[in-house]
Amino acid sequence: MFTKVLVANRGEIALRIVRALKDMGIQSLVAYSEVDRETLAVQLADESVCIGPPPAAQSYLSIPALIGAAQSRGAEAVHPGYGFLAENSSFARAVTENGLAFIGPKPESIDLMGDKNAARETMKQIGVPTVPGSDGPLQSAQEALQIAQGVGYPVLIKASAGGGGRGMREVYEPAQMADCLAAAEAEALAGFGNSEVYLEKLVQRPRHIEIQVLADMHGNAIYLGERDCSLQRRHQKLLEESPSPAVSPELRARMGEAALMAVRRADYLGAGTVEFLLDLNGSFYFMEMNTRIQVEHPTTEIVTSTDLIKEQVLVAAGQPISFLERGQIVPSGHAIEFRINAEDSQNGFLPSPGKITGLRLPGGPGVRLDTHIYAGYTVPPTYDSLIAKLIVWGNTRAEAVARGRRALDEFQIEGIKTTIPFHRWVLDQPDFQAGEVHTDFIETH
Image (cartoon, rainbow, N blue to C red):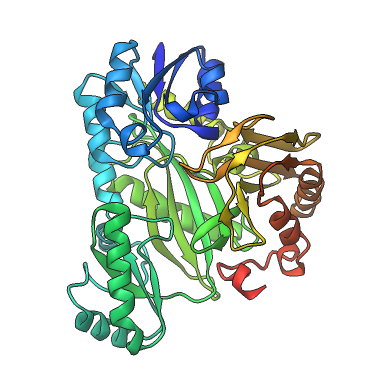
């Protein structure tokens, strides 16, 4: 087992990893930028090291700085968290080529699944259902028009190399194609350094369902149920729950087996997520695979009584999944995660950085809070706006919703705008209470 691990990330995920390492008796070394010097992860880690100025390109995205920090302080492994370099195969290779362990999948697996179009073609080859669309990157607007005519409008143009809603455009009629294609390519190039895009049929009013998978070096691979991530704005998740109100045990098994087919084809190692679209008829289609831990992993941890960060570390150290004797995991109860962002949800979700002047945290039965903030902490404008994840659990979905309402009412953050009022609004919507949540929920309501 490792004795010291470099945490190559920031915010709540860095603190989450630090805590898991402490539980395992492993020393934590947190890399931080100059603006993050006062964060809780830095304060609570065993060691910390400054890797550069605030811009991510000069700190959290600097491979030489991170490798140098790990080597100079005697770390044996690197945990990338999510975002930044977590799905960067060049970083994974650099880590291993410098004699360190990468707590994540092999670079080859990241390459295979990181190109969304290539991953989609791979899934088609092994029989995992995919949405009809182009067979590769689009070469011209004329080609896009021909394919769209074949699959039928509306269609979706998507970046091959990225996610998070960037490089994505919905096209409802031929006259929109040229402009939407150009905009998607430009956004993909700016966001991911790769302008390639592909086209697929737009599944209308789908649910976004993802399957949590875990695989080790001993040939073991399992899935741990699903998460429903349908509540989104601009293709970015705001609330997740597990299990999904729309997934039966039989459908869960079919989706889980499809996810494991992807794991085996990718020769995958560690924790990952295979994401599907579920249509109104109950058919599901492969969307992408995220080769990292997800923001919403706590919902799975709660309903399966597991620690996914711990399992990542164990697997990277060559050990088997620790709970295999339990057999296939069956979810217990219901969990909901609310992403608390420093955003003004009443004003188009505009970012709201600034100093937190007052803070009251929620608690009580069935409440978990993953956050790095505290009274007096200044949320910088430099990075992602996520500042906390509020996770609630109940024996039933109704009980989880009730606990979510109570916890949100208890949770007060002063000095900045947050998405807490938005989540209170969501819980009051009859459709949400009935489990009728699709990716167009916000636009519809």
